[in-house]
Amino acid sequence: MALWQWGLLALFLVWALQSLGVWLQMRHYGDVFKGVTNQFNDGYVGAGNFRGRFSKGVIVLIVVTPDLIVRRLMIMSGRTVFTKFHRHEEFEGITLDQLRANPAVLGEGETGVAEAVTRAIAQIDRARSEPKKEPGLSGLNAARA
Image (tube, rainbow, N blue to C red; front, side):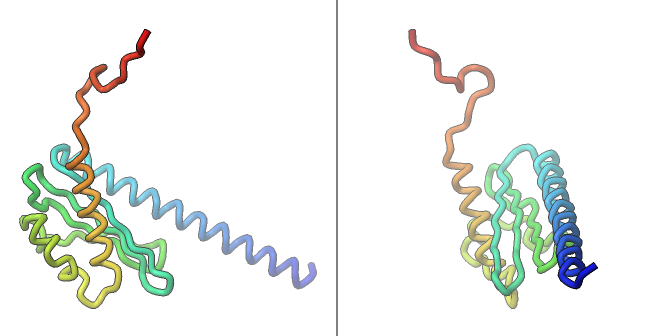
């Protein structure tokens, strides 16, 4: 084989390994998100992210009760696909307004954590402002004859 063919084969193998890693990380994210939403079926869940070009990427999951008390706060931060969520129990039990007032307290020394927390809180605010849909046919628009 020529040198360029070996290079092309190596490039394909690296791409295949990266695709496998991304698939495993997305599966982990889906499993954690489903686990949180199944465990806490009342309240709200917010997910925020920060994509760093040359710094670490961050994903934050915040679960709050209907009266806006933080039940669970989980952060996934890293550069590789092997990064996992870590629970931060020291912030569980505080109000969402306390977290909103100072989101940087989570990410002191880490870039992007405050931005991801802010985005997760904004997602919770959007979910709270949407009108609740009633189960059954009441949420459908009736066809007009």
